[in-house]
Length: 332
Ligand SMILES: O=C(O)CCC(=O)C(=O)O
Image: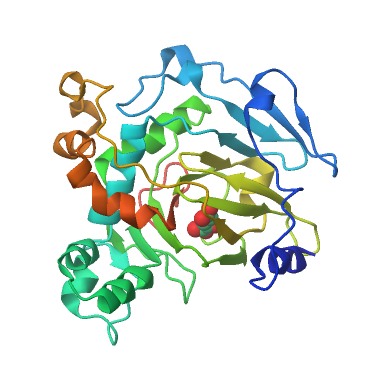
């Protein structure tokens, strides 16, 4: 059943029927829970400890977050875009410019791309003046990993295969983990997935982590994904939901080991290159979160932001974060 639904959404020859795709939107905010034909209900939830949370620049106040669960998929939580426009731009720029650099690992094949591209993809893309080569380099980037690197062949994490986990992103993950009551959550492995329009991610479960009970955090930016969340086997019919720019999805509890996939990316927005003037960035205290203050400032500048905006015009970026070690363990 999972594969059939995946195929229907993926199909290039027909437009998929989107009527059953769950849209988590403001009708729920007005107090009406959404009910879908398969009895899936989207319910708004409130976190109890938001008052005490120390938030970060670029994130809305936790008391204004809009968070939802799906009754048919216990453990799935979606926080609808808790980022400001500047915040979204900051994390997009980190994912494009910084995270695909050495010592992080990228998918780019050494037979097709030379070392300069594999060690600093965005820089080489920015320097490239040939339109065909630009497109080749741009569309080839599909993932980068940091922290513990997932070995896609053996599906095993290795103590020797790690690169530093960025401090700012560590702070971001911990903020959301704390909001959900997972104050001991340690972000230890991250995959940034790059999805040009037309790309997909097929059905899988994430079970390589020795720690399978810590939640998985997923941050989506750019164009909208149709995301399928199924059950523990491929027999169960998945639910399709939209993951939109800025959404934070958490796979916790029962859903942590469920099948999921991205069969389609839908273009829903044109990136804006407007100057951001509504936040006084110079007064923002970046220090405690180790954020890149210059970057946080620069993303408000249209010239600086233009290449990022242009990339996101036909792409989606997703950062997927896991805890690898069990509580109390210091290494694998
Ligand atoms: O792009 C997404 O939303 C899902 C990514 C994912 O499932 C993964 O990286 O394992």
